[in-house]
Image 1 (cartoon, rainbow, N blue to C red):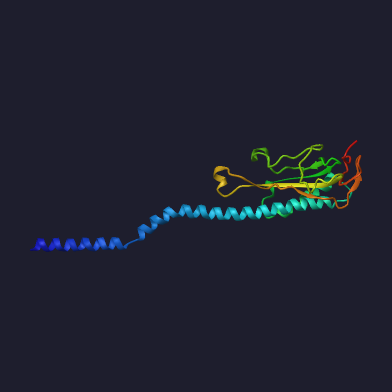
Image 2 (cartoon, rainbow, N blue to C red):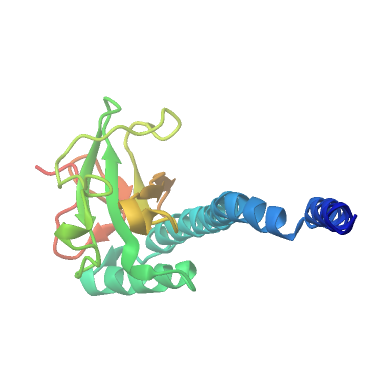
Length: 218
């Protein structure tokens, strides 16, 4: 009898332990959280990156427009120092984002009577913040005399435009692990000179740089 009672009590204890174990979900919740946490972290980083990319891209667009507009508003002949000051002024538009990851260039483009657009002069910041080991160039900067492609609305014979270009090397949060980079911006902006002077063999109104003859050149 005693043995039978002990067995019965042991069975009851096991049943109670089994029911308690079934009701205890703490361990299951911890395991589920461990599985879902990496997914939540990736999703969070993705949302942060998307928001940052939208804001930076908007800033780069504003920077490009500012660079083009300020140069087009220059007096009839500008110096390299004056254009350098314009770069510095335009660069402030990018703040509070990292200004060492942007590449800028501004050029005077003259369209001849045959609607051929040719670079008269081009200038970049004196110090390029992007080092060679930062990766490939964000865009190729044309040289003076190069023929460039411009929109049809810009290709008006015997006119000129200021062409500004800027691009930003954006590194997402996950990019620091696998060196992922995204180029933002890189959309040229064209602005007609506000107070240019007629020059070159065709007397085309343009922004002339003091150290560069007006175009087309003889």
